[in-house]
Length: 210
Image 1 (cartoon, rainbow, N blue to C red):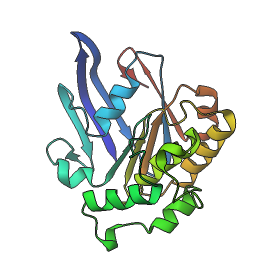
Image 2 (tube, one colour):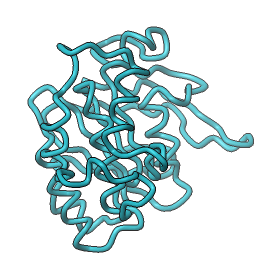
Image 3 (cartoon, rainbow, N blue to C red):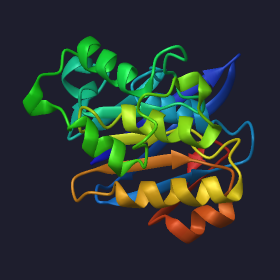
Image 4 (cartoon, one colour):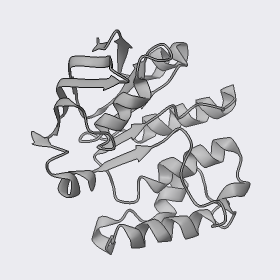
């Protein structure tokens, strides 16, 4: 279980969140929607351990992710709206670099061919990341976050800049990644499509989740 407990955060003195509390259960796909400026991207960064809230706690399996960052972040994956892979490296070179930087050993690593197949990237592994289409870049960004087999996968606007066919492919991929113990949460402004595929829709409005 991933929990927000009495989260508070302000930007420029404006309280974006006040006493925000929610629980995200494993084994299902969570969608986060809200109008521009409500704080979707800020919230997913807080959930990912990238932005510390000014008050409250983010708990994964009852452990505060900001008090135990190294132990807990090894179980998290975060995909920003623009995947941050090296454009002058191929997909496979990026993946090997990630393994090295994370100091991952073989038992803790999902086999790269399996990741490529799962994300429908076979045939593109030797293509420079910077040369890929937007849809392939999004899938490569997700694939890069599967290497360490995360139990929490959070995505910020994964379908931004994608056409309807590319979005449909990405929705299908996210559904395929659901596991009994894995929490998947993403933000999106494509609300009609979101309602069609997610197990739980969260609405962020006036600093509250419902």
